[in-house]
Image (tube, rainbow, N blue to C red; front, side, top):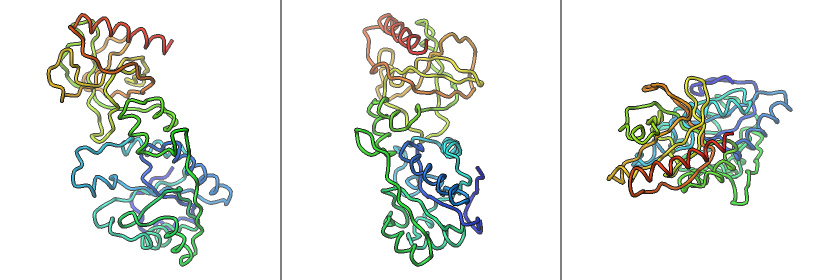
Length: 309
């Protein structure tokens, strides 16, 4: 996949194009991407994805502190590349760019600069100033600029259509099973190991404290999870705790991301690790004392071993 920073004067050869945010590149997105790639191959042309960075909400929302997304910019690129797309055009999203109307976007970006002849869009896709551009808008513009437009239906589960917001809601509420079904892969979180309180080692379960590398990466609901842990290219089983650790911490506003890596004994401060969320084991609980907490952690460890054995 060839990555283009910006859209000026690309002039690709009659490409088949789609456009969107693609947060998480979930199963709904992949229905669209599969259709894009198949159509391009059938026509003997190149497939192109047009996306935006940073996420538009980081530019348009007044308060961005609480915003969280399913994928970092780097993760999104890797997921799109895995879909088999030929070209990725990344447009710098600014306040000025947000003022571009839907028809001007079609004319100036898609047709004039990228050379689009075929446009494939999702069933609920909106774009342009104020998000007013939709399929009807595109069809009107297409007739003017000789653009063929195809709309692709989304992907549905028993819980309804798959969308990035539905997956964010599932992860935030602790429904990892539904989130995984909608994503089509296990959710991941990467970060650096930082110095922690070192309480885990006092009860026999030393943990690595993780600081997410992307500040807007969504952190799943509080609780204990069975995870795969990737360190220096090697994979290990682990049990992950997300929360305030109420048994040993009196500040409920604190949030710690701590992973106990099974059969592992090495100093990894400062190293990058990736967590793959395989199963949510339980809610975060407050125990009478550290002894009771250690007893529960032993049970959690046994459940992790069973899962990965």
